Image (cartoon, rainbow, N blue to C red; front, side, top):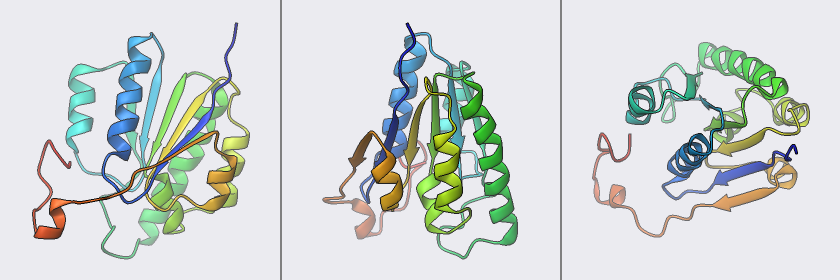
Amino acid sequence: MASKGYIQVYTGNGKGKTTAALGLALRAVGAGKKVFFAQFIKGKPYSEIEAIEKFVPEITIKQYGLGCFIVEKPTEADIQAARKGLAEVAGILKSGDFHLVILDEVNIALYYQLFSIDDFLDVLKKKNPETEVVVTGRYAPPELIEMADLVTEMQEVKHYYTKGIEARKGIEF
């Protein structure tokens, strides 16, 4: 019997959105499911990429970012990379080839207007009904929250970054 694929959103200013999505990906692989992990904005060799490639080849991973412009303004190249990624992901979501599709940092892509919320919601509306989707990133727009079946907000209570601690390999990236 086929099962419905829901739309989950992990948002908020707290740490752990991508990590939670990766935990779900591991659970899905353990249950024999196929996973596609798309990273928007990010285009560097983050430790999660290296771990997936080394230990979990059942997860297909692709980056649609050219670096990480979070402290700067996105370039036209950043916008084109994100839009190309959205077009590719639209086909993946429609195909039903993957049980779980994680769209990491899409909320940030939407916040920086790399593509429109209307275009993104249209992609979600056309997904295979059995495909589960997880969308991560701060600043989830209200339209996405309304469409989602599950929304989790990570709240920052305290973070050592405020004391000047830099991001550490294997912990933050």
